[in-house]
Image (tube, protein in one colour):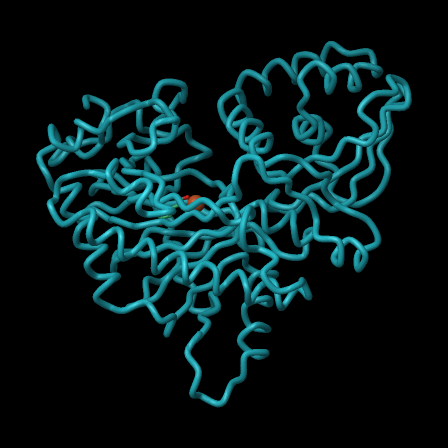
Length: 418
Ligand SMILES: O=C(O)CCC(=O)C(=O)O
Ligand SMILES: [Fe+2]
């Protein structure tokens, strides 16, 4: 409980352990609110047919990896009840919130704080309550008992989110030319609800609610109240997402980028805090099952000529993603040390040792263009999709001729070492 930010009401300054290093602070710069983040009207009746709606979604998913949906069929009451109960939860006495506190990521329902409180160097200004919710009957008895209406409200909300998520996935699938129901079953069988609470912060220029990241799942639906905080990284700069009434913010996760063979983007985003009010958001993460095999969809591989990502099990991706977040400092330092002390043939060995191809790219000053890269040992790396400014879409094949192993090794996705 000592760790929860929710207990820091009325603090006058940001505790040192929340102050980010200079280059990572959001600073006082005002980020423009983005009026151009696509807003897709999912309701009919305005003369547009389904094909047009699909085209808007695909365009937004390619350019931004983010869009908002309105007229989505989820009732105002369902959303406003959800937001109220989410706020009520974090307005309870902090002792009550803390009864659900756990650092064990295997717990089905838990409260936690920041990202990985015990391992990270600097903490983020966020507490969260998270739990699985599909199928509702299987998990509902594990959800919070207070506020008393929590289970009822969240049960209705999560069923609606499942419907909306499936509808959006169907539209995306159709737009990509995939067979109908492509994203059903295993690819979208898990639903995780996460209530984020970002208390008012005495100095928002020093800290972040969440750092730059892109979501590891398939697709995320976010309900936010009328308090600004979410920013997307686009064309080398941050833009703010304007809270719209009765809208959901939709963003694509890494798995959709991979399945679409790089056609759709999983974009980086972050959360800034503010000094006047707490901000509460409700994120629904739709995930594949952990056994599910993820790979670029066959028709899109054909269209592109080759797969940009190798096939893998979703649980493999998840453990790599977590390990990379946790070990990033350690790997970065050891990697740089090895690179400095190396005799040119060291790069291949470095990758062998660290299993860390992204670090390799980073250390090589990030080749941004597609092409072949070779070090003196004869290790060859083919970058098949460029390293964008945002680092969000990078993929390469590693052909280590000298070592003759891991042939070819495809990365999953970039963006871990920024
Ligand atoms: O709370 C928000 O605005 C965004 C949350 C988010 O990006 C996440 O939970 O992954
Ligand atoms: Fe996110």
